[in-house]
Amino acid sequence: MKVYFGHRLFTPENPTWGDPVVTIHDVITRDVTRDVTRDADAIRHCECRPLAIVTYHSPDGIEWGYPGSGPADLALSILTDYFEETPEQVLRALKSLWAPRSKAAALHQRFKAEFLANELRDQWQIRADVIEVWLRLPSVRVCLERLAEEDAELAEVRALEEVEHGTAN
Picture 1 (cartoon, one colour):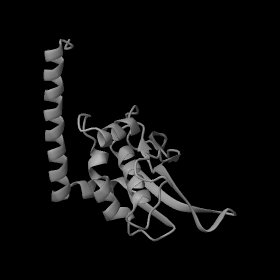
Picture 2 (cartoon, helix red, strand yellow):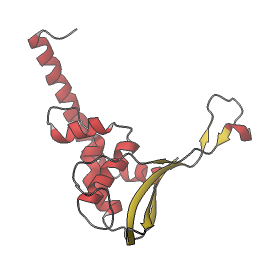
Picture 3 (cartoon, one colour):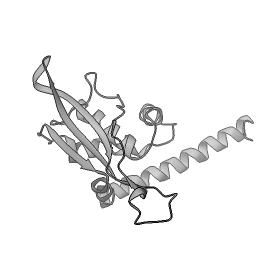
Picture 4 (cartoon, one colour):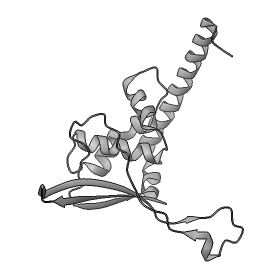
């Protein structure tokens, strides 16, 4: 299970507020190539990695603790990783109505308000299972269903354009 872990890195250059850092920890995984489910060797801890930052709103980078552009980019980055979308895909969806839809782009402002805007601690974590529960909320499900419909409609339009312009296979 993924855990998104945020903390402030206090440095001589920034001793009072601390630079925001977010890493992703895979708490535990199972080696699916092994048949033995209770074999201790089949269970292993994964290394942590830094969160890839998707910059769209904030000129100053990620942040948390207020409802602004830094937390918006942090929410966008977390959801991009969670949904396994690429930063390029998410940015295209944000910048163009004709690009395929992105779940991260569609939900990041809600996620920011729910999880990051009011987070005042220097250290916090958001587990993937908590995100899964949040995604099952009726208002979020409706948003995702609408997004899927829009994406299907866009795919139809793109297919029609390909046929019209003779670029279809």
